Length: 184
Picture 1: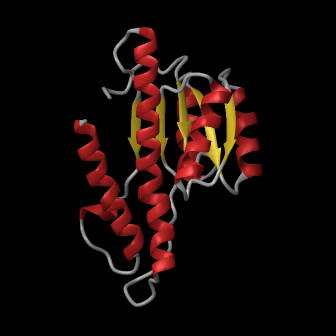
Picture 2: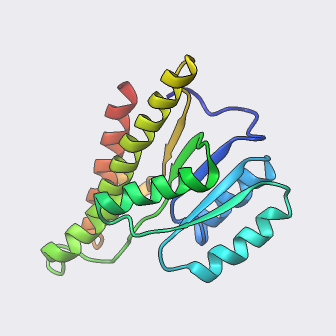
Picture 3: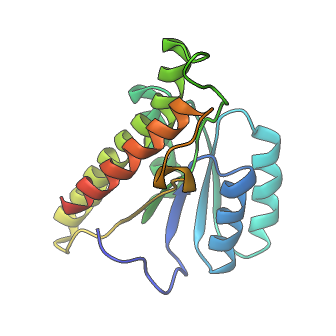
């Protein structure tokens, strides 16, 4: 959907898993650049609220969206709640992830699917739904579609690593999905 804008001032980004760790750092960076931020969280309500207070000192709009993105319905709800609260969404940053140290002998179908749902399916569904929003917006305004998606991956996708099989495979799938969907 194009290159990331140099000037983020006044743009709005939804950051999944934005309340803690890397997601928090992304939200802080965006706010420093003048970008309005929608912080998505599932369990980290206290951290999200604390971050929101901190980011508002940067004179940007900050919204909070709680939601479970382990299902298609949950992804749609998060995106619709974000759009309702913030109005326009210019960027989607898929940061939320699940990571467990499970190798071949420890992995179960339940564990594998839990990581696959959050690490691959959620970003894929969110990208598709975000693309629909961007296309609908461009049709209403008569302009070209304009939206940005960033999918966070992991250094592990460059090779193989024992001990985190579901995580590794889900991130490799996301990398391939990102490349293929970028062509569309």
